[in-house]
Image 1 (cartoon, rainbow, N blue to C red):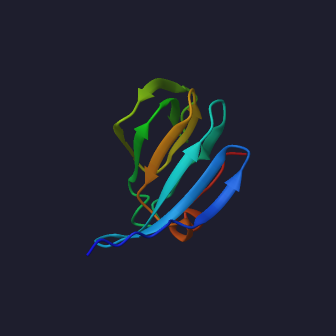
Image 2 (spheres, one colour):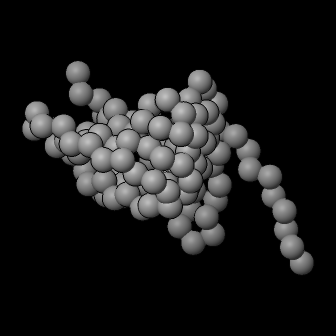
Length: 122
């Protein structure tokens, strides 16, 4: 028998929306739908949550610009990413994702894990 389950939205703002689902093998994960021109991230993780050491993002569709640097460095690196692409972000790496086109990502962690291990540079 086929089961069809609509995904509930867990967030919605000017960037787009986010849905969370229960992955039968690994637990909760996020699906992020981002509008062209919006920015996500601008933070780093300390590795408190096991899903943030490293963080895994999968760009399913679209083109985005990834900017990153180690929190102790001044040099900002950048790369254009086109889906489908898997990104692995180590702890203590400040990062931001700028959607060049509408994009869809899978973020391999729950909202709770994200909130527990997200820090900003001030």
